[in-house]
Image 1 (tube, rainbow, N blue to C red):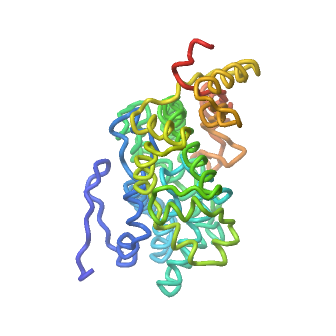
Image 2: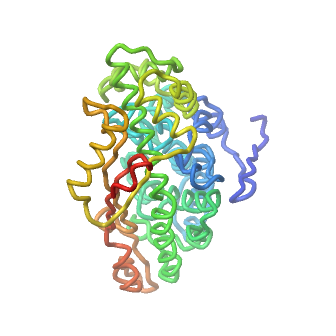
Image 3: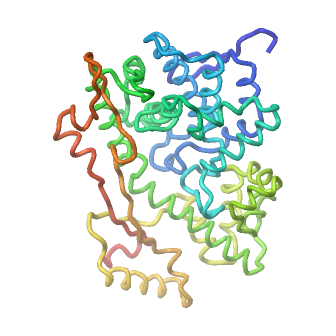
Length: 412
């Protein structure tokens, strides 16, 4: 880097300085630059027009917060070596590098059964080969195979740098101020006890605010009903395209997209054949949206109709409720869709979506947020905080929904 620090101007945190030459090389690698073309929130911009930020933004921000967390923990007397600092920063920087087009919206659609976490690890392993083993420590921390467990918890836990960044960033870009968290306050409260990441007890209200913000962001942004409709439609478009491709029907699209429309890869193939991963890292949002624009004119009614609806934002009508919908509702709408479009072989399943979503703001079965008191004992936030608040946040909330052409809304 010619001994010059590189600076990124981030709208959330201001100037972020990149001092480490290896980290700078990883940011400039095509695998990471691809994240500029992967939207952080899928099709959420159809509801919140400002939510066009990318996985690139988020990864850089999470790495910056990791640096702040390391500084805090060192100030409190916890040893973190320069090598460990580099490793944990690389791990958080690359934690989302395996995301496919539109992030979570299309996960398991183009590549069934393969998670973005597994792909992130695979990409990190490939980069480790390229850099002669320089990422080995980062991979050990990422996979929780390093003796200091708290370093892994900074990457993946109930209160990690990933969540701290995406809540504040997604709140900023969507304009949903209820999701804003005071990340700096939470960072200064971080501590370590018995190799576990904890929060100083005086930060209890900041933790409560963090959990409330997470709950609100899920229902106002991540699981907003119109976002659900748009993203399930996107899934159905790709499912239909894959079905048509399996029937030998030629579809317009980029080389990268057509490759995955015409093949279903197992995890073993990603593991054993480097060429498959090389094809995957060519995929991004641009491949999918350019294809959908072309598919609006396809002869297949389902593919063209759904594609037009997404590009024109004429989305399927969605209804949410706490209880499952009665079977007769599904039957009635399904029959109406058949009549409207002349379907006869189950094609109505693409125009009628029935599913459910669940939100768990704080799930202590998947880890704890522990508070550290001055006398040295620790207590789970659910035991220490306002019982009514935490009880509400700990209970999973489930919603059932259906999506259907809005011209059939009178059938409900």
